[in-house]
Length: 87
Image: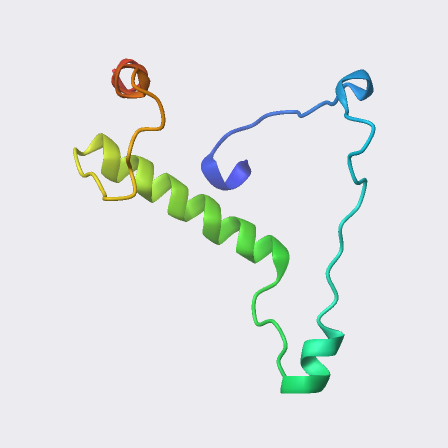
């Protein structure tokens, strides 16, 4: 959130968690490294920063009036909601 200039504290309510939620997911690239000699070049925290920057740029582009083919609205009233949020 700091990347976006937002200072926020995040809390969770355990009573709202689904009982089948997985507490921890962790990837291991050992097998692909053995087969293809591949290793990730981007650390996870850097990946998150790249994604946030891309989202912020896309939001700015949208506010500047640019649209993209993948911006199809999911719901009929979504366009109205987005227009209201951008004012």
